[in-house]
Image 1: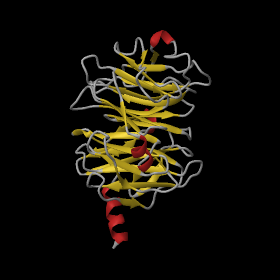
Image 2 (image 1 turned 45 degrees about the horizontal axis):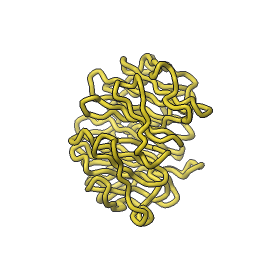
Image 3 (image 1 turned 45 degrees about the vertical axis):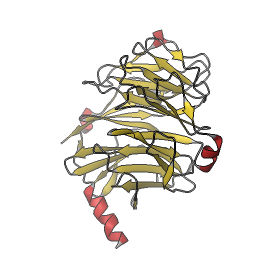
Amino acid sequence: MKKQIIIALILVFQYQAVISQTDSLKFGLKQKIIRALSKTKTSPPIFYAGLKGEKFGSALVYKSEDSGKTWHPLNEGKPISPYAADIQAIAIAKDVNNSIYAGTWKDGLFKSLDKGKTWKKVLTMPSSDIRSIKTGIQNPLLVYASSSSFGVIKSVDGGETWKRNDPKTIENTFKFAWSIEINEKNDSIIFAQTYNRGVWKSTDQGNSWKQVLDIEDKVCWDMKISEDSESIWVVSSKSGDTLSSIHYSEDQGETWKKINNVPQIGVNQINVLEQKDEKTIFIGSWKNGVFVLKNNKWEKIENVDFNVISEILLNDDELLIGSWGNGIYNIKLQE
């Protein structure tokens, strides 16, 4: 019975897009480490890229106004901080300024009120290591940030003040939240993907947490929530190894199924193209580039000629793929 359920699940994910070999190009930032990619809700979307540098004072943020075809550095080409080497997360708020938040490794959180032209450090942020940032949908002043020491930290006033869970709560739940996702229909619902502690869910803006998926000895790297907020996909892999898994839920994380035919490539990214009643799954990896589920089989996208993937974003009829050392790829999709 279990095998039949898994097979039925896989059949749902029929591939509805064709990779156009001739339309696949690399745009800008070649040979750069892309640590973070984010886009606005505007049309056409504006993209931001956070780079990982080699030393302190090399953390740069780039902007694209043509869907990733060309990029230019912000802050007059200067790093946002002399003490940061890595822009780990970028998020754009829906407040009056369309504030941009940038999380760094070891130098905390930065905020821009002028579309990235200038940046100011958020001194009230309690963590120096910001792994992921999500901004509110219904509440434009709501901001979540994940950290390696304090779990998920929250602001309800646009980053002026921050609240973290008390030490006892962190001890009983998780302290290392690798990434976070929110329910866009209810931004009080948040999911945390953790380092070796599975997936946790909060329905009260992170004040309390419930573990909804227990994955031992793996890092839950990334999550995708469907447009109707009902379906969820989570990818995990063992740190430093190729052991990979994808778990899938159809009821907002209450119950889960496991897809058994996942390529063992160190999966670390996922995105899903939703077309009517069918889904197309794209996954990125630490070991072997980008794969897509096609005709019930995983196929490698050969146009991505670099193995270490850091981000996968969907933009209408194309994929923007950030790599850990060869810039950003643009892959055209055709129905």
